[in-house]
Image (tube, rainbow, N blue to C red; front, side, top):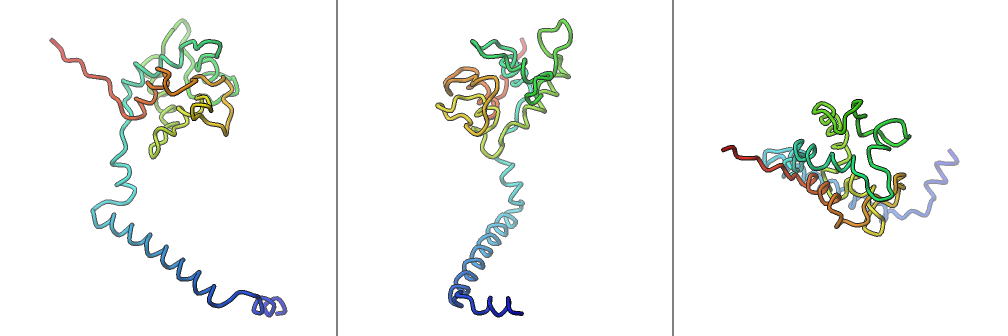
Length: 178
């Protein structure tokens, strides 16, 4: 009981408690109003946000993005070297079949699924696959060091731009037959 008495004699002013209560109620009402508005429009708030997100195109990924993972980039290791087998880096890529220089369609689909998880659907240009290998001087990730070196010195790098196009929802232009 002595603790309770001490708490009751604290310096908290009843007006401060009342003010805090008003702020909490106002925030709760605003959140409820936003949810109700989204519901009355016929959608959950989550559905509304996901409806505006671009889907990632497998064909663009396979034909334009995957080759970047195998490309030699100056004095850096290829993405494939570190991200395919046993280097200690996250394994997003699949080991090439013996004698192969590129992945099979099935392997590409697995890689597509893995790499798609590195895309921030709410903030695409802040996706891990874009900012982690990008130089911090160009806006890259400073929280974690990329063990393979900063693969992209700037956002003007054509390969960086190709990955960004894929994340933005770019699709392979369909060829019209003769």
